[in-house]
Image 1 (cartoon, helix red, strand yellow):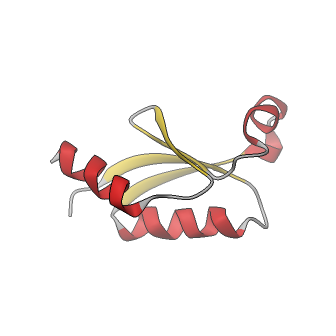
Image 2 (cartoon, rainbow, N blue to C red):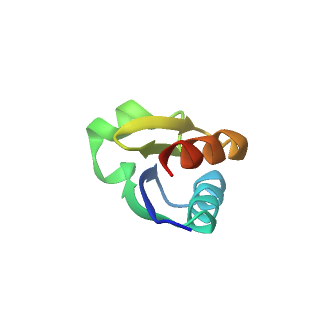
Length: 78
């Protein structure tokens, strides 16, 4: 499987964030993880909707990854 890049906005002790990371990893993504608690602007922006997943600079998922949509995104890039 080809490697794709994603940015995962998350924070510690977030089970949905852990799940999002595992899903992205399973699909072969190179994952940049950003802890929103280290940046007040990101905390204000994303606090109530993490995890947030960006693919190709565009927010694709908030809260939970829809694997059907993720596979479509991957398929459209092959």
